[in-house]
Length: 324
Image 1: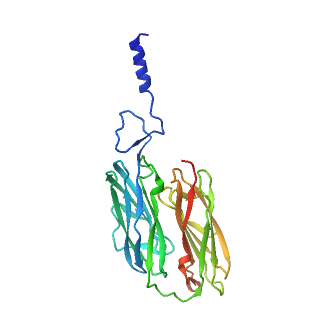
Image 2: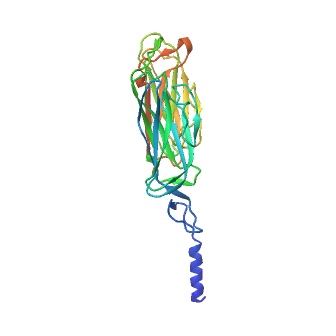
Image 3: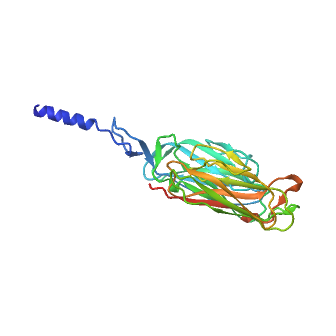
């Protein structure tokens, strides 16, 4: 074979080599024609402004999605979960591209808004979304209540975020006096704690919750429990007796919600329940967080009354220890 033939063969061999599946091309960089690219990459970050209100007030909570150092022209998904005892204000419009994924006026069940929109963001530019909220009359406390939200390219967009750990955040709503009076009924004075081990790929585990009653007196009505999974975490397996799925969604950017109707709790008693969980592929590394609440069930004239709600709910924060 002459020298020209060797050169031609070498060129053909180089042309036949595809970019490996792990190759990622950043948004804003040119992709050579014919190159095999697994996915484009962007680096968004996210934060939520805290807000202040009183019971039965309307308020707006602002979400900020900020682009990284390369331009992004593509799809954006945002999920917003209301704080406990807070609903979406039906009298006000949602941001463009947003709709109710879960509408539930039960104050012990958060509502969920999902947004899908096309964005064109220059480097370091941000887009904001204003969520209209109303504090329910069942919020009889002054203090902090938390929701949560996340923003990222949709899972089916073909775009990956370089660092999902800064794409989600708890949203704080500070409730101020005056507070509604406590209704009449048998006091419950419940409180809630939890144990959640670290999460890892292909290693299902359980979130263990412990609820207790401090108030004396006879056992009143039943107990209501609500758990919102972290983003990129789903329930896995059989739920405890009395529990069911209020929201099931395979989209990792939408949390799942478990609700339980539990038997009456005698004074001084503590009960536990375990919710089986599994980590979804490509979950954020480091901390991931959800929400949980325990409250008297709405059992008509047998319903108990919560006298101190501030220790009835908590953030459920754990950590994803899977290797990058």
